[in-house]
Image (cartoon, rainbow, N blue to C red; front, side, top):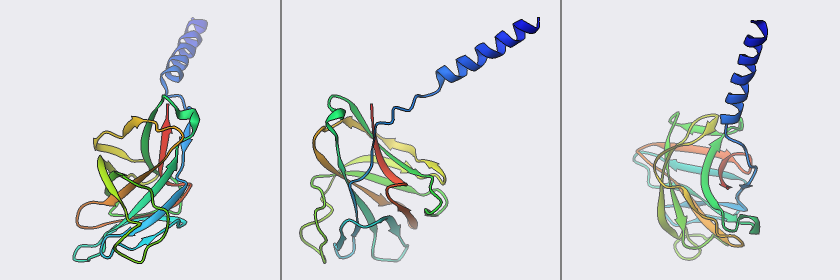
Length: 181
């Protein structure tokens, strides 16, 4: 009877482990992140920290632009945009804010004092994510998967939603990233 209980426990453990997702370690972190000011079009290129901000009654929505370089090893695979905060240096206000994610038609290449190139080059919206403290953002709606553009650089933008939003993170340990599989 004792052997039967041990066998059952072992089979239960094996079943649990085999049903867990397997990490493929195929991760792309941003090559650059840049801050975009919606009020005046100012672009701060290649900064060390990301920021998404909106203040009710304020006039300067702040979004973060990212440039990702897709390796040749991603050719023919599926890419997925992800957002995660698990480093101790991030800030959130409110506790679990939502963000919108857009593709950019061009990548940011330099700073700009205001309106005019370079800009945020906002393109198609991928969807909305609910940011979670200490973990991976949850998908509210949209599709965050796309064919990997191997050998290319592509831009994305994360923006605030709602009346009040404030998120900061220090790249490359937190914030946006892309997995491919």
